[in-house]
Length: 592
Image (tube, rainbow, N blue to C red; front, side, top):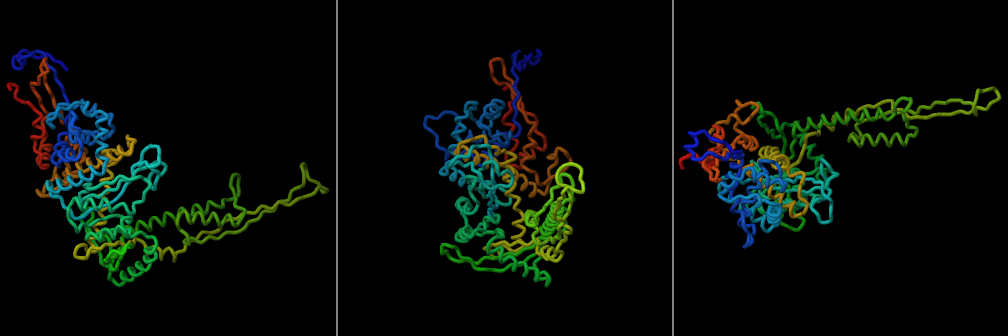
C-alpha cells in the first residue's frame, strides 16, 4: 500500500512516497522460539545429510518453519507452504536470521525433508538427541512411559508392500489405514518414540522396538511401561522384565485368563463380603473423596517361552463400581432391545406381516437375536403353534351343492411370553466391574492404589493422538509414497512434542507460583485457570501483526509490532522466552 504523508511527517521521514506492509506474526514467533530452544534446528541439521552443492535454507530450518505453519494453520499440504511463507516473509527472516524465500519451500525440497525423516538411521538418532535435549533443558520427569497405538486412514489405493492396508479399526473399516505406535512421557504426554507401520498388523509384538529406543534415549533402567491389554503379551512382558524395567497392563479376557478370571472374581466377592478388599479413593471434581475401586492381589511366577529367567509377577484383581454400573446399564439396554426384537419376530396377522411357519426357523431367529445382543441364557421364551383352517370351493364362481370343496390350513408360530431369568441376571450383575492387571513392580515401587490410579490416567496418551488428528490434522493424508507417509507422520509428532512442552512449562510455572492466568477463555475472560492448554496458549497470540514502512527505494525505515498484552507478556516470561522474542521484530527509532 502506498500513501502520501503530511508535510511534517515528510520532514521527519525524508520522503513523500512510502510503502506500508502488514504481515502476520501471531503465534509463529512463540512456536519457533520453543523449537529453537528444544534444539530442533541443531538436531535436524546434524542428522539430515546435506549435499555440498546445496544452497538455501538448511533442512533443520526448513522443517522448523514448515512445522510452524502446520501448527498455526492445521494444514500439512506441501502446496500451501509457499503462500504461507509469502505472507510472513519479514517476521520469519528476522526470527530465524536467515534469508527466507518462498522457493525454499517448493514441493521438491519439502519432499526431501520427509525422505530424510523416513529413514530409520536418521530418525532414531533425531529422537535420541531430542530426548537428551528435552530432559536437560526442561528437567522433565522420566519414570512412567505410556505405550499405545492408533490408526490413521486415507483414500489411498491399497498396494502390495504399501503402508496403507485394510485392518481392524473401530471407526471406518472400509478405508485403508496406517498404524502409528507411540511411547509418550507421562504425565505430560510428550511423544518420545514413534513407529509407523502398515495398517493390517496387530499390536502384539510391536512395542519392543519402541521400548528399546526409549530406554536407550533416556539412558536409564527401572522405567514403568504402561499400556493396554495388547501390551500384556507374554513376549512383551518377558522383554520388559529382562531389561530390569517394569510393566503395568490389564490382562485380556481370553484363553487361560478368561478361565481363571471366574475363580479370581469369586475370591474377590468372598473377600468383599469379609471386608478384606483394599479400597481406593480419589477426589471428584467437587473435591469429595469417592470410591474409585477395590481389590486384592496375589503373586505368581512367570517364565518366557524362550527359556529366559523366570520372574515374579503380581496379579491385581480390581473391581470398579463405576465400570460395574456402566456394565449393568449396558445389560439393561441389551435386554430391552432383545425383548423388542423377539416380540417383533411374530407379529399379528395382517397385510404385509410376514409370519414364521416353521419351528426350526423360529428357533434360529431367536438364537440370532440373543447372540446379537449378548443375552444368551438370560431370557426365556414361550411360543405356540396356531393353525387356521379355511374351506373353499374348487374352481371359480359361486359355489353349489354339487361343487367340490378343498380345505386350506395356515400355520404360524407365535411367541406368547418373554421372561427374564432374574437369578441368572443377578448372578451376572454381581460379577460386573472386575478386571485383572499384571505388573512385575514390587509394592514399594507400585502399590495397588498407585497402579489403579496410574492406569486410570490412560487418557494422557489419547491426548497425543487427539492432537495428531485434530490440531495438526494428519488425516486425511495428502502424501502417497511410503517414505513420504512415514516422514510426514514423524514430522507431525514433533509438532505434538512442541505443544506438549509448551503446555508443561507454563503449567509448572503457574503451579510453582501458586497462581492462575486470566483471559485464556474467550467465552469468559474473567475465568482463571492454572491448567492452560497449548491450544489456548496459541490462541492468545492470534492478534499480533507486524507493520513495515519502506521508502520509495525499498529501504525499511520503520517496523512496528502490535503492542503485546499483559497476558502475552506473562506467558512469554513463564515460557522462559522473554518478550524480546517479539520485540526483536521492531525498528522503533525513526532517526536511526
